[in-house]
Image 1 (cartoon, rainbow, N blue to C red):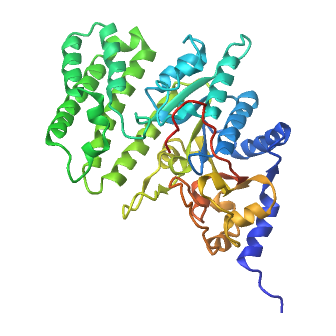
Image 2: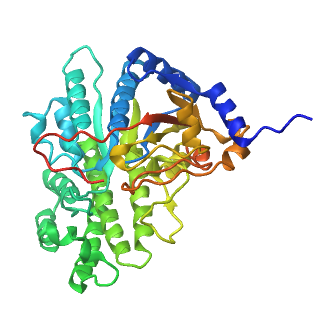
Image 3: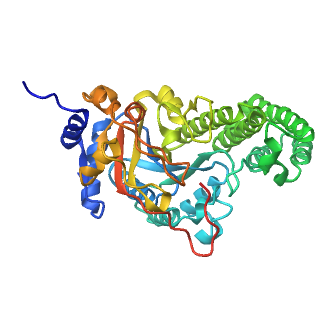
Length: 433
C-alpha cells in the first residue's frame, strides 16, 4: 500500500508545477514573468494592485518600479497611484508632468505623507516618470496618491489641503458666498497641530472643544458639497476636470472627519480603518475614471487584498473590509491584485521561515517567483490550509504573513526570498511605517 503524500509534499509539487520563477537581476527575465502574469489576468483589468507585505522593504519598492516600467512599456498602463496623501499627490503629479519647476528635493516634504518622499526608490520612480514625459513621442504617464491626509509621523492630518482645493475652485467660479464660507472654515480649522495630535482623539479624553469644532466643520463641509452639486449645470461645463477634482476633495475632507470621530470611540481603530479603506477605494475609482489608460496601484497587502484586513494593533475588532474588497465589488474582473510574500528580512526583524511553513516551501524553490493564487485553481488548498504559520516579525508590526486566506485575497503572489531595509535619502528624517 502506497504511503499517502503529506501536505508539505503536495504543496512542494504544486509550487514546482505552477510557479513562474525569474532572475531579479535580469530585466529580460523579470519582463517575461510579468508578461505571463498579465496575460493570465485577461484584457478586462483596468486596475492592477501590487501589495507590499511590509512597509520598509527596499527590494519590494524596486520591484514595484520595474514592474510599473514594464507595464508602461508593453501593457497600456498610464498611471500609478501609491499609498500616500491624496491632496499632496497633486504636487508630485505636477512635477511628473513637467508643469512644476524645480527639483525633487522640493517635493520631499509637501508632496508625500508618512515621509515617503525620503525613500530613494520613490525618488527614482518619480524622476523616471518625469524623464519619460519629457520625451515628445511618448504617451504621458501620471502619478497619483489615494490615501487619507497624514502627517510625516503617521497621524491623521488636518483636512485643510483638501478643503482649499474645493474652495479655490468656487472662488475661481465666483460662486456667491465663497469668501464668507472660507472664513468660517478657516476659523474652525484653526491650527493644524490641533487636529494632528493623536491624544486629541483618544477614546478616554477627546476634548469637548475639538468635538464641537469637528461637528460644526462637518456641517460646513456638507454645505460645501451641496453647493458644488446644486451648481453642477454651471460649474461642470466651465471646467469639468476641476469640478470633479473639487468635489472629490470635498468628499474626502468629510471622510477625514468621519475617521477622527471614529477614533474617539472604543471600537474606533477598526471603524476608522474601515472608513480609510473605503475612502481609498473611492479615490482609486475616481483616479481610474480620470485616467486615459490602465492604473497600477501600490500599497500594503492589507489595503489591496480582497478580504478583510486584520492588523496587529487591532485587538478584538475582527478586522475591516480592505479597499481591494470594495474595488472587487465595484470593478469585478476589472480589478486584479498581486500580493507579496517575504522569505526573510533581517533589517525588518524577520528571520528565516520555520520549516514546513508556506514561506519556507516557497523559499526552498530557490528563485524569486510569481505563484497563482486563485482559490478555484488550487487543488492543494486543503494541504495549504494545514501548513503551520510562520512567526511574525520581531520588530515590524506592518509585516503580513501568508496563510490559506491569502489564496482568496490575491490573484498572484510574488515571493521575494530576501528583503533588505529601505534606503533613505541622506540628511532626511526617517520614514514612518
